[in-house]
Image 1 (spheres, rainbow, N blue to C red):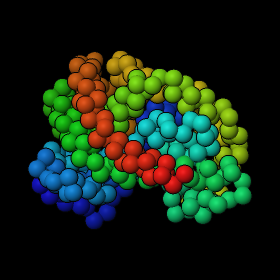
Image 2 (image 1 turned 30 degrees about the vertical axis):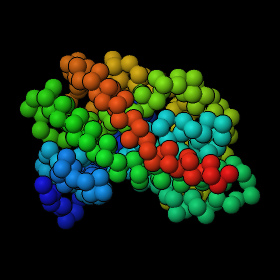
Image 3 (image 1 turned 60 degrees about the horizontal axis):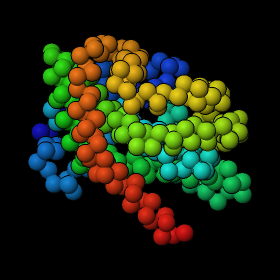
Length: 297
């Protein structure tokens, strides 16, 4: 199924969990998304998701609409780097910026200029940002991600009959990411403790000043956001269905979509099992990259 692309559109950015700011939908009900042509019949090599602007009216079986720059969630990005607080912080920076300022970016191209910086904290932050974008690229290209997103979208539509708009495809996408984080957290809860503890070792103002020098524009809100992120500790909520639903409803309110009913809980146990079964496929790029790093050292 082919998807038409409007000549012009606006997009929005969102990260799950924060309650710091509103993230209004783009004008004309248009969103940036990933379009996949018939992924259930495609070969693995064909499952390359293309970044497109897709009109809300075009949401359908073969279209996954997602927020611009949406990525693997925080723990999947950073869990391997809890012993390197500034690198770990770098893996979270692109997602923090999507909360602080929707137009602010920390791009790989700019971050690479700081990889050889004399201050090890700066180079580690830059390396974490580069790693974040690397992980995003391969994650959204995996067959498992494409198939699970579509599968979850269909299940959301089943539990929310009559909802043929943006909400099912949006939820189908983010459920894969949140439930992958939940899977990894349940596997190693002590590592999540270490993840949050690592942020206690950073100089928040130094991080904010450094990122302002790397990013496409500056913000005075980043230094205030990092303590909020650490104090809310919303990643712990992902492992319990009721708490995850509560977090999702905060997101629904923020993007001005209807609240999810309690019956939405019915799909979560099976969805968790599906992510559990395909965990290895979802993380294949992460494991390959880690192997390459170990060979280099």
